[in-house]
View 1 (cartoon, helix red, strand yellow):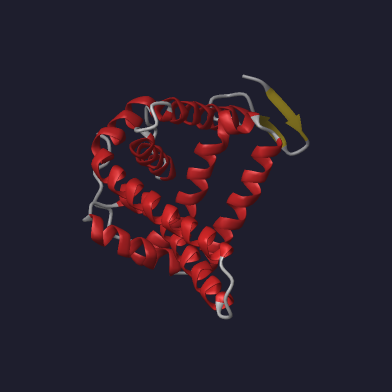
View 2 (cartoon, rainbow, N blue to C red):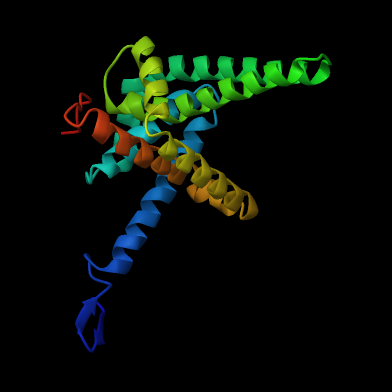
Length: 218
């Protein structure tokens, strides 16, 4: 180990409990998870269960569980693949439908266009709030697909300032990653998932402090 002396005592920073060691471990974990997620998304059809597995690993981190990232990722991939597909396909269809609506509305000209446009923006906002909550909730508790969708919207609207804060942080992180493209390959997805789950977990602790129905890894 390496020790640094100060007037207040000795700081051990390169021991197994040192500051630099912990930072290095976190950087490695985020990088490994990010690369693992990208590799699992290469077949395209596995993107949705890979998202579920990504949030499943992040959930274990948030609970300070020391896990084997690869085995936990594969475990969550297998356990949540069906619901991940339902969530992913449903979200893609809704998102595509809203995008088509925006495109068609842009091409049209009529007197009350602004009102329809405003309503569509509001619906998109609700969709985004639901989407950033649905995967964290899916790995947090076992529930039906219908209840998952409804609860995700409720959680997105609950303490809405936290949801808006999450979107602002994600936007800033996305702009930074686009500016420094290496971040996309090494850190973007894992850090984004951690930010989303961190905000969602603040709401979980308020709404269902004793509800934790997803089984922990033995």
